[in-house]
Image (cartoon, rainbow, N blue to C red; front, side, top):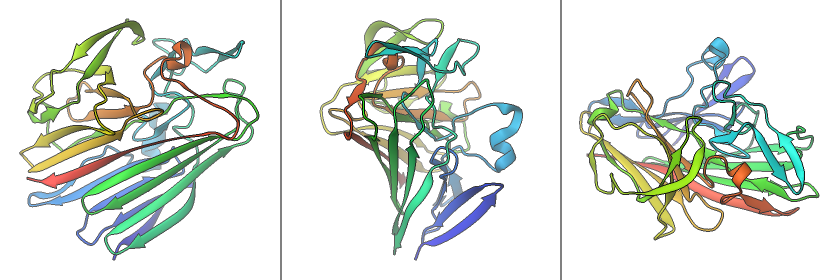
Amino acid sequence: MIKLIHKQWGNLTLYLFELPNKTTLEFLPGYGAGLNGLYIPTAKGTISIIEGYNELTDIEKEGKVRFLSTFLFPFPNRTQDGKYSHEGKQHQFPTNETARKNALHGMLHNKPFTVSGIFTDGEVGKIEMVYHEENPPHYYPFPFEVRIKWEFSVDGISCHTTVENTGTSNMPVGFGWHPYFKTGSTINNWKVCLPTGKEFLVDERMIPTGEKVQFDAFSKPGLFNDTHFDTGFELNIESKIVESSFEDTTCSLRIKVWQETGPGKFNYLQVYSPPARNMLAIEPMTCPANALQTGESLNLLAPGEIQQASFGIGWTLI
């Protein structure tokens, strides 16, 4: 049976699910609906593969937002100058990436989602979360509801996202997820495999220039070495599921990250390797950076319409 533990961090509740094989998952609904931790038992001990917060003070320290494994809405990545136009009206997001004067990762990364359901049965479980916005801010004046359903078992977890326009006017929508993967060793020694597609070239502010080049450098598993990415890709869509993966032989673990593709789905990917080389962000997105301005793959939801997309993580001992 699955064991559920609640930990209180100030006004936040951490939900821990311990599976029969000791795989443990942590969720932080009250701070962006995040998957805060994923611990996998191996022959060499338990491996933590998701970078998360350790306690309430870790979230709030130095006022620095780290966007760890949170839901990005109504746009992933960046919006240049925070400005966009919708149906003839100009809107201005706060520019929270101050050095580059961009708006970064939307507006829900720290919002309190409510747990709407929990289910466990043997070795499978799920937790459902919802965020309902009836009084939206002036920079995104559209009432909406976001529903997140995490489903998990001893060898995988999937996230099913539903966004609904609950207002009376059309609503521009893009979203994504921001997980950082780790194994406890340097990513230089990982064998990495990434889907093929078109790489977005960007300017000094990390805004796409409009030029794209073919990308297939990691179409087959290869050592990551000193490769650096802070890069967005438009994926080649040849099936309904596209996978990224990495393998760390030091802990005998292979991780795959899958994303649903097709109309309104996760047809884009952002990959980021931080300077410390101790983790790798693999971010499924429904649209590229600056889509709120350019309109590229930005969905327009009419009143009452919904957009749904799923992604997931699987793991195998090698």
